[in-house]
Length: 365
Image (cartoon, rainbow, N blue to C red; front, side, top):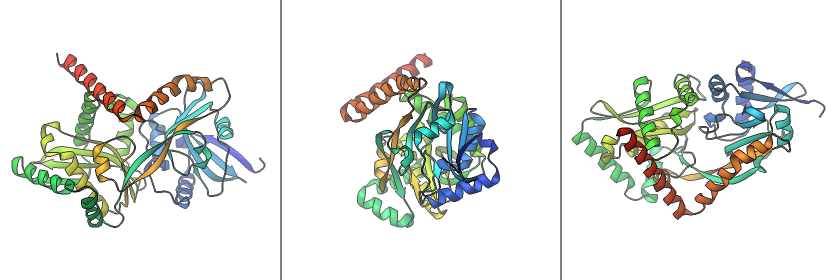
């Protein structure tokens, strides 16, 4: 259309004015300042994923929106950082509309896959095939107010967790918490714990993927106020017993990689870490903690509400799109079938855990 064009750039080709405008447009949307939709996250992915691109939507010569994505073989596209990003979509000035398939054509994509599309992404909403719950913790009224609510919604949870923290201090040693650690040795320890957890539960080890390791390393060093890594650590007798690495903006903390030392499992150090972290984050200006999709009992205990995110794909009627349909849709349908049947989901989780145990015993033997 007259006055409209789409310019495709690599993330490192965005200038300071683009980054400033991206953040201004994002703020105008009124959506939570999730760090995964900040340009700093796209820039970091661009350093470890060569297919990372940004489509700059221009109106009358001025940028009106930004669409970060990754381009693979045969025009297969995916959300930027797919697999580890918990909030996806385009950043568009209010009132700016674009047809999803036309956007893909301008980007040279046959398809674009997403698994955590942010609510309100009208450009892509019609292409979603599943709606998922993403639990969040609201701490904008302060930690004390949140704690009151938690005692009402999850009776006994706070008292039991506090009791385990006191027992940890008595039986192991002084308990100490650090909200923002810069210790690379602790980050490496957390990654080892998390890798072991993935293997133990029969799931794919994300830290076995070189690009994810590189991305975490880059974000751990980031000083960007709207997207920086936050390593929080719980110590007992001077030793780390639980840790979490996530991303935060000024007001939103995205839950990412929590793990703990199983040698201290009877003290529930992960839950102790969660409460300590929520208290410290609230004091540091965080208003919302996004726990992300995926079933976990502790999320149900901690959450105050659910956000909605979406899974699906935009597919153009071109030959390359068949690759997406053949590669992804059967697996997505199978996951949806299992998720809709709780007993089957529980059986699948047990099977995965048993597979992980068997793999571990074979390696150990």
